[in-house]
Image (cartoon, rainbow, N blue to C red; front, side, top):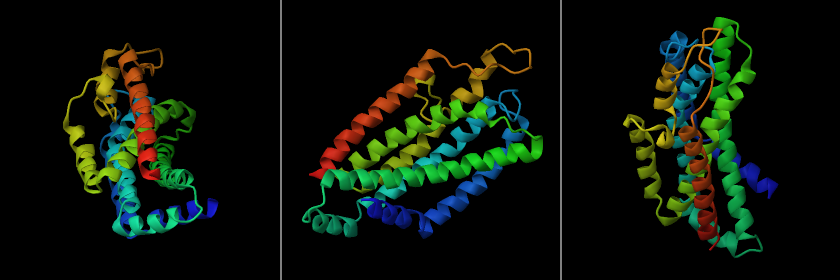
Length: 239
């Protein structure tokens, strides 16, 4: 299975469309960093957890589209023919599906790591800031719920019809236009740009990185919903 995983990962990453998405993401990262983050978000420092969280939330729609793009490989007509031949062999369909999901997850994490390193390098070069351990919590709160939810939704909807993946891509962009409450703020963009304004300023001149219960519950909701969708999707794919 390790050989299948490496083959699938190489097929996803060494692809012209992935390269195009990587270039677009790189350009968009630079635009967000040089236009918005350099000024600080909600009157916080450019190197505050609030600003870095806002940076990730801005880039996250492109990461979600990349993840959904990976699923189009999984449900292409050629892939369906290969899957029929594969399932006729002694290969366990469940393990095969898990390997596919693992390769898509690895591809997503590769792109996310690129975005994170780019943001940290920007802060290190311009502001000589290196306390990146402060960013661990916002990174986990932003990436993990979205990764799980889109992984489950992509696997399940792609199994119904591949065109639903493109509908999901459009939805991933459209929800950025909606002023969502903290519980339903999927990317966290609205939350991270407005909530710091409601907090008292600490001795260091920055509001502490504290999160309200609705936002945390929303993150948990997307995680649980993503796991459930993933289980249904794996069951459907294995059949």
